[in-house]
Image (tube, rainbow, N blue to C red; front, side):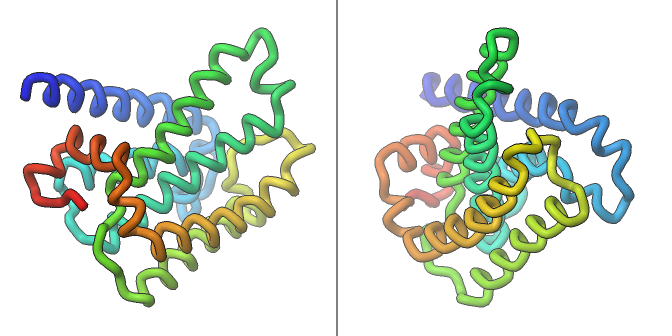
Length: 202
């Protein structure tokens, strides 16, 4: 029991640190963005914050959990792709340590998104709304300039990959939710997050 509490505390603090670092990273961009578009700028820290609300039981709606799960996986993988497509920028000698931390941190973010995935089948309307939401996010990122700064040479590639990820991640998490929730690593992290006590394990 004590081990689980310790692991949960570490898990929680790491996510809080990620939120603080993430919003700090976006500070300049947020200060230069118009109010109606502010919500679409800090993708990673925003979805980690929403993720913690689900984990802590503050929001218990399956549709919301699914939305946040998609956001965690999509933006975690998106960031990993940006890093890997631009190794000369993010893994140069002066940026190597930060690049490695960002790489593994965002892989962890994508994995964490799986633990709040609802295990029961959701309505097709939820799938459609969530997909439209992330497609709209992609539109604001690449046509209304809410995307974070990325090297210009990979901008078009990331634009196409982002729309692709919206479709792929939403579809995989929706159609294979039961199989994903039954994976042993997902089950173990759900136990650490306290889902066992709330009867939310697959």
